[in-house]
Image (cartoon, rainbow, N blue to C red; front, side, top):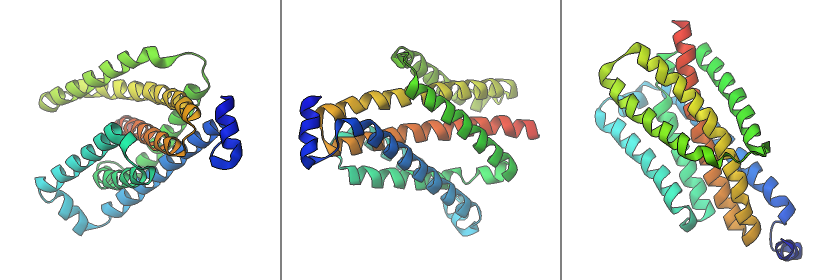
Length: 239
């Protein structure tokens, strides 16, 4: 720690004291920008009939979107250490824009007031759990296996219910989804905090940048999924 601080006091980059603040500021900054981009693209797409026809006029357009989004997430997750921070940022923002195209359909499934209420509830829930994950002294690593198994089970059950079309089972999966991404928000926030130790050890500005983008992606995905599940609950109440 002393070597790290002394090296960076010479002007080569961040000081050890500032690493945590720098990483978390960038994480939430990039995440907020990504959410604004997603929301802006979604609103614009929902009001543009030509763009909607281009995307949803055939199954090819939908599959291209899905494959592109999965490809970007997999690239960022698996190859983050080989990407420059600038490239990682560009890919993250492209993914956010593509996700906006996909999420534009919620404006046809729900009333705007319901969407805004769900977003506000999601923001409060996310903020509270992220704060808990950052400040708690409890090690949440033990939850990793449970959360991953729950996520896998939720994915499988969702596919099964696609064919079953059970309203009651769908409601159960919605509640499971909310609790799952509430837990993942706290877990991922603590994980990002722990990852900053690597930046302190290496004293590398590029490492700080990569951690920030990977952390922003994780929390962005947590927020989007939490929002979609809460939106389902709010939507059901309005029916």
